[in-house]
Image (cartoon, rainbow, N blue to C red):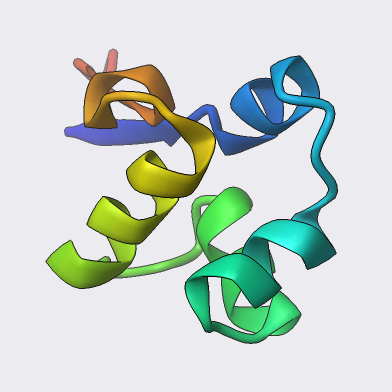
Length: 70
């Protein structure tokens, strides 16, 4: 299972910087960077809800499940 994070794409479409989003949702830029690069092991529902609220998007706009080819 691979979950791909498309947060950079949504940020670019909204013409918003990571720093602005981090401030708006109340997390550090470093933690947002970990999420954007796909290195996060988990995401809190409250964080996902805040991201979707600020970016006016759905979870499916930033998260994509793909099958890992082996």
